[in-house]
Image 1 (tube, rainbow, N blue to C red):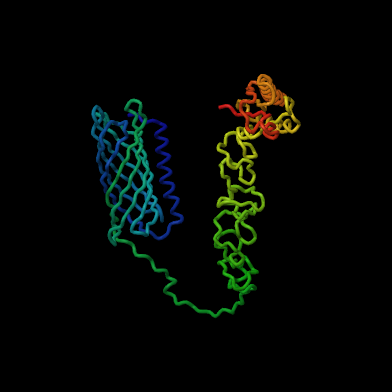
Image 2 (image 1 turned 90 degrees about the horizontal axis):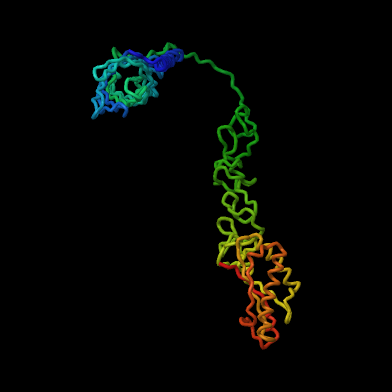
Length: 445
């Protein structure tokens, strides 16, 4: 017979622990039923899958005694068997355990309990018998059936069997379900009547004591934690004003008496609204609104085009896309399409007003380095067609050169000129021809 030293130490520790917890409870023992009792029960065993065995049945018989207000100690003998699964092993087990039961509510008819115990199992596997240490722990309940104290009890235990004879297994963990009775032995003890109750009380007159209560709230000063409570306010047992919503502002001063828990409040007990938009900070998803801003229920300004820029600050409030939207709410495509760069008659030289606009555009282009831009030059219809075609190309090239000087990668800029072929205004007027002398840009798909 072989018993692993490590397993033995584990079981010994559990046994000593169960006994120690129960025995050390004697010092604080109060009145309880300390009769010996017996506890027969039937068992249903759900074996560890490594056993290769079917579910089994068994029985156990215990004898025990209450040793403290919450503790019982028991000695249990068990026997169970598990038949082999296909190709498995037959197990027959007989053993003994020392258990400690922690009774949670001994005075009630229904009482839950926990159990911890250790012992040994003599296990026969295919006619090979061996004794190994074992331990179990579980939870259950007792239910008293009659005045004598007898009742039913049931528990579920996880049983660890340190049997290492099966290859690749040092132990087995089985589930054991028990259902049985507990039957006290002997008559139930009658509670002793304290001798003091039989002696008539001697009534002595005591001098009248004057109790000080300076704020007249009904709480003596010695117990009053708020000694200056105003009159006619509701107080708690410590003499302090009630604060029903727990915001640390007394109800008598609280103008918002249903404030949710853990919300910052002002001196009036109302949630803080830092940006003064009428939506409390704990509900406000946009806490940096400008004074006087119109906001929705979440404390945010309307954003009609959904580009993340509030309408009040959006230069393009009806953007059809949020791609590359800048701080002004306009997309890169909207910026380049809306700008028209005008030129003098017969000239490709940039006006000063155009260079100022192009400088801002270059910054936007550098912020979006993956966008390709097409630059298209146009002219009015004054002069020969070949001259206008050449001039339109030069105007597009002038725009490109300026953007490159501002740091835009020239490979991103495509240019072409189409002369006077695509007017946007009437070439028969000076104003119309001025509008046609232009360069347009587009973000390429």
